[in-house]
Image (cartoon, rainbow, N blue to C red; front, side, top):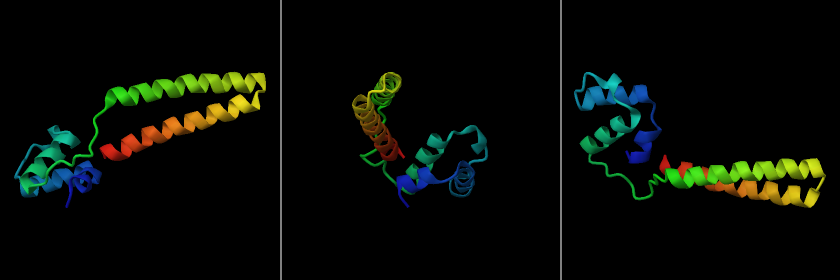
Length: 106
């Protein structure tokens, strides 16, 4: 089992596993990240290098997407097909970056 496998599990399953393997009784107070970290430590699983905790980058991407959506709406109102096409492609590229970041973190 790897870190990503643990992180993909449901919280209820993680709590059951923590009760069995760690003998913890009060698992309802623990968040998913805490449960995964404790279980991984007890099982000797190291956290992978690819995990990215880049909240600032995620926020910047979302801001760019919002700005591009405004440009898209302006292009729709102006009936400018070329600008509309370019803006939609740029929105798609930014969303792709965002999805890649989400994939790497979980």
